[in-house]
Length: 357
Image (cartoon, rainbow, N blue to C red; front, side, top):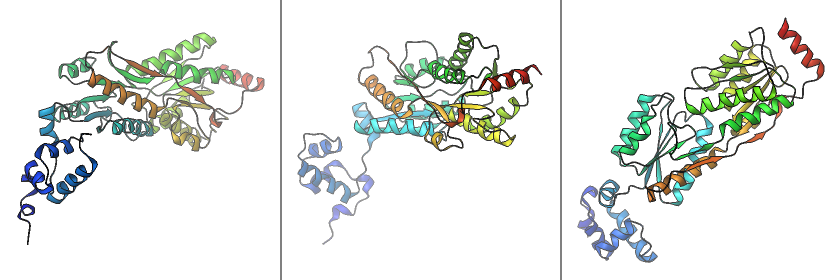
């Protein structure tokens, strides 16, 4: 005999239907759906079996309207193709999964208008909070707007406005100091900075670059910025840079993607990375160790940043009025072959002569 309770459209299945099928109360079904620890494991399995048999789909949106939480966090980054963000999102998801949260990931492609569409859509879906790496050119008022929506927001890596705000990232000034100090220790006196975008963290890097030049008494200063911070930008910028009369012997790159492009560009014009021009990247993505040559990079620990950002967001959701927090991790230098060996006295004299000529 066919069970008539299984013949109805699964979209119309109610909690009472599940309760009748499982032989429990409606309130027990509700507790199971909310993953309450008050339900015995045997009963939980029985209810879950009935849910699967009847094809019931939990309406989390309706539950959120009743309970005020969706257990979701919006995540907006600007370049999901960059492996840095892959590692960072992995850290975010690892932390969220422990708290029964899931993330909604969006890629702004560094477009302010695209970013705005994603933010509005996430608001419509009632995410409990946001992890936002602002697109270049975003207005400082954006964070205030999000706060006015009543949506907790943690900025990651980049930031808008002035403190107090919730933020998770790394010390990008120290990133540049580590790279520049290493290049100077190898004897380089003409060090260029390659890559950048229109946001506060890029300005932090460039300020640190100038501070290092002053501290080490270096007269050569060359910033060359492209439209973005991709492999293609590095590839094109280094070829332009190396055509100059006073060309650098070393380059500090905005990130590893730019550095990979720089090394490819050097090879394109017949130069050898690490020999004809030292190269340092930033982030220490997995590919850095596999490059030709392996890339010296300043590690910024994206997975750990993702974990810290998720924890901060969950703390903010739980305590909206608590003091703002900034979690800033310390970078570390990973030395590989792309910087080559220390310059000899002859190398330095040759470089000075080339500069004068």
